[in-house]
Image (cartoon, rainbow, N blue to C red):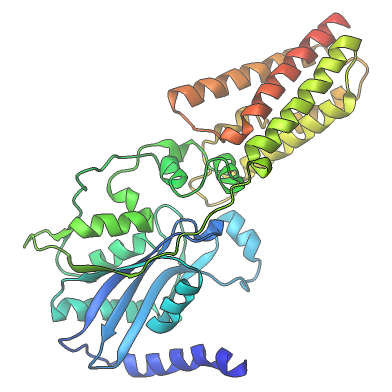
Length: 391
């Protein structure tokens, strides 16, 4: 076990000791590796890396951005604040390859058609970027991740500009739609994303912005060309490993739509029972106002108290209204203040605005929350009627 732990350290030491002054041979190749999605949410979007291979120099190494260290002090707090530094890692190709084989994730390679000088420029840039003082960078899921680094490194390190041509069947999509290509909309991962991220990701992504996903790095690189010479960027494409297809058990009974459907029915049942007996289940209203209020406070913090750009302009606040948490005192009273009925009508209007925002495409909301939205609307309407009758 100790030997296994020492191997990566020995590789890193020997690699940097020998690579700092290394000049690539004519036989060297630089390629872009595209890794397919994995089973975990953090792996759902795939991965990219640069492979530098030079048989004459006995060199075969992968540089990949977008890695992080769980041992970072205050890891989760920094992640939530958008202040977590990611880093450029380097591994031997064999280790890199075997790790993704073990995860049963597809691996595709695109060998770049470069001159020897261009290969050296990219290699030198990666070596310099991998130094301890340079390897860390502030990660952004949409604009500065493992995929965007592929095109950015080429743009910075090469003297010649690149043109990324659109594929023939290219259909521009919103950032959220691109996320939904990789994450089932009726999944808990998608639910969290759709609640936390605001309307800024519901705008159409430009052709180049599609390349925040590894899949589109592969697609756009296939047609990319050097601007001046019009020479294609890719010399050869090949599949290094094809994922073994396995049957996926999609348990609908545990999905957000099912769970929130049951929750919505429960709310409607208690509302119906309250209606028949002309009463109010106080604990239900306190629970709904507490949960929606707390979620709203969290969304406000994500919007204004973090460096995340994708959490801005979040219209989930139309149903998760932060002020709800401060209105609970009124629910504890036998009869609340008269303004509380107006406040309930305001919440009903907010839910109607949410529906309008969804219809016209301002923001797309989590489909798993539809039963909750309907239940909240009916509950608020009942409370207006109840308090009006008993005023």
